[in-house]
Length: 147
Ligand code: CO
Image (cartoon, rainbow, N blue to C red; front, side):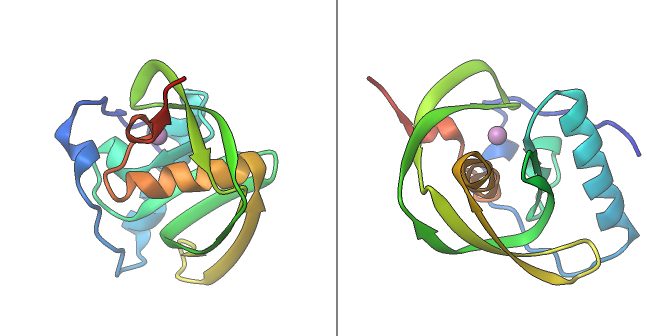
């Protein structure tokens, strides 16, 4: 495992749409391990592959609800609403209020290509939505609500 460099806004790679993973190989497994290691070293709760300059639809999240590896994640249901503070390891020193669904149902694959459906809410739902946005080149600052 290795820690990777987290790129910073306004790096244009953060604005690209990432490609779906088609091959579930050792390289993908290594990427996921590195994402976890890099995220933990930076004291984050989520990290997406484009943040380490890999334009693949892969992200990791670790909250009190557990550790999640999300490959080709899709939000298949969203319910309710929450407004809360967010930050991002690629937007250092800035925090803002973002409106997100309170609950989401997300379909995603793990590193072995097994499909999972996660139903998460509150802070974990916020983290899932934030990381999935990264895969489409969207940052929380695009959705920030100014008071
Ligand atoms: Co982020």
